[in-house]
Image 1: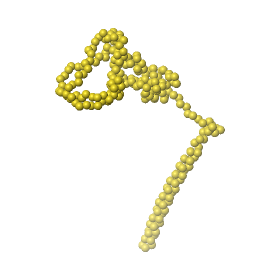
Image 2: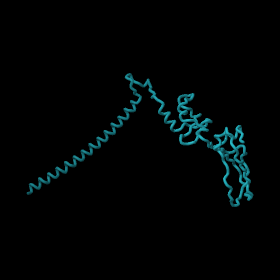
Image 3: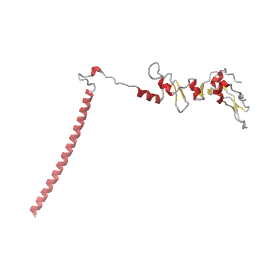
Image 4: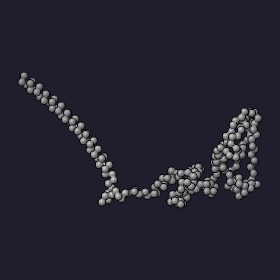
Length: 221
């Protein structure tokens, strides 16, 4: 029988990967005896939620002879170089233990500093995923919702207002911009007038020359 008070039950459904640094020694043909896992036993009725989490090896298969390496540990086994924990459990169990929270609770529960939950203590998950985000920034959807729910009013400098209540802080910049536009338009107008004048002058010269030739032809005839 499984002891319901066993602290190892709290880690059911958690896949933990520990990374250690080692030095590789010379290969040997003697295989290293693996640790034999214990057989699955009965589960206490109080641990029904954990009854779906059973792991065991499959059927044994014959393999070719291989070389094995016996490493020399750099990191002590009590202090791994890196540890990865993957919590593979039903969403209801994660929610019951407070590892994840409902989306409705995220938006409804006010924080101590205001109407938005703190990014330092936020624990969220996507509705279509079991990925848990701990101690991270709020999700994109939460940032959009929070930005639309806050009424941000512009800051007006009262000292910069005229007697009629208008703001003249940008008048100097507007005047300079308009003056530059006027100068540019004036130059464009002058270029077009010069071009038009050259065109009219050329046309008049051609017309006068043609009339003179016609007049000469008439007198000669």
